[in-house]
Amino acid sequence: MFGYIRPFKPEMLIKDFDAYKAVYCSLCKQLGKDYGVCASLILSYDATLYAILSMSVRGECNSYKTGRCKVNPTKKCNYCQTESKALKDAAAVSIASFYHKLEDDHADGGFFKRLAVFFVKPVAKRWRKKLFKYGLGKFDEIFASVVSEQLAAEQNPECGIDMAAHPTAKALSILCADMSEDKTQRRVLEGFGYHLGRWVYLMDAADDLADDIKKCGFNPFARAFSLSGEYDKEEISHQCNSVINESAAMLLSSYNLIELKGNQRILENVVTLGISAMQKKVIFDNNKKKSNK
Image (cartoon, rainbow, N blue to C red; front, side, top):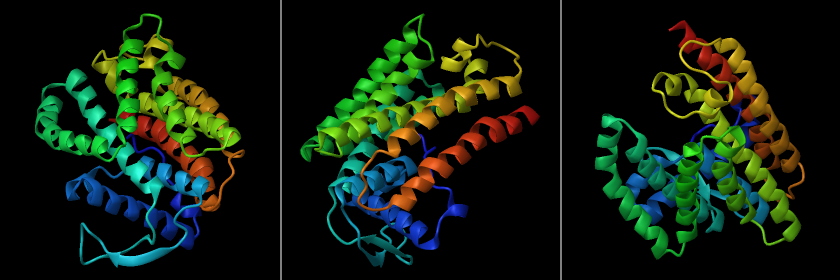
């Protein structure tokens, strides 16, 4: 996954950050348990948010216990005290997204990226087989469709920002809707997932804009703003920010309609402060550093 969905730690209560970290460590443990110790290396902030949101909607895992870290046995961590479907699903999402990201990198990457994929892919294939063994193949199907739909969109001469962002947004909407059996909540979660997925995709596009232009690769902002070669980076950063703000506002509106059974302060921190802080960092701070270089 992309790694843009993070909490804003300076504004979190210590007990809330401890709870967030406990879910993070629980997901790490779940990945190791279901797919092997090495699978813990693909742990991400995005999958952690997915796990916390799913737990909160389902009312799972409200108590934690202390245990040894599986990666670093000298360290103690807090873990969920009971089995959690949310954690199993989040681990499956991590595996499926990682495998299909490798597929995409192999198709579009340069020599060194393809070489890295060559060595990593056999391990990822074994993890993927376990998805189907555990009856979680639906997650693989979701991310497989993202890759194929994304490729089709990028090859379309009329592809704009909305068309390019749709495959990722659609995938997140399906994943979030699956968290609840209630029809009303499913619709709310579907909307939240769609706008979150759109935000994530556009953040990645804004982050990669300069590199994509340099390498003549596809980028929805480059196509929408007719960019090539030199361009006014400050002005384009503001334009990208304006487009991404639309998704940020919509996902916040959808979030406020979700019925949560716990972790409200954590999720509110991520959705309000974390997203805005990351958006500022990627679009303005990082681009400024790149310009200075």
